[in-house]
Length: 109
Image (tube, rainbow, N blue to C red; front, side, top):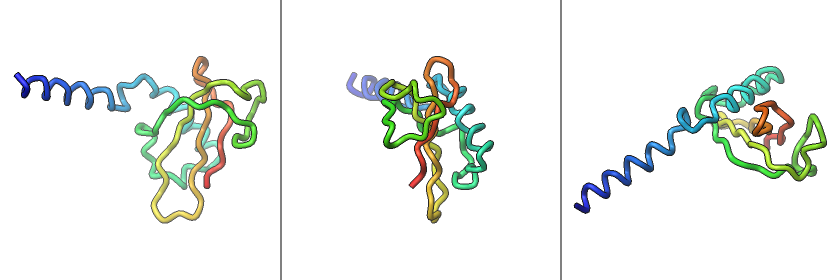
């Protein structure tokens, strides 16, 4: 019985961590398109489908915003994996969680 519970738990945890099934693919795609528009994709490994998406409360001191109405609001933060051995990291893209539109970015470090 313990084996069955352990197997089910492993399946549940691995299923939840699949970025292709987490509902954020459109958010990742919008973020990636913004990266390309600004020619920042060269700082990433190009694997936009697996970018990390997390919640973020907009901080004016950290973010470069396209519209300041988002200060203090919760948005989605899209973080692409940086290339190894690069001096500057790729910016983190901020996306409105309702419209899936880019609202700004946090410069890479």
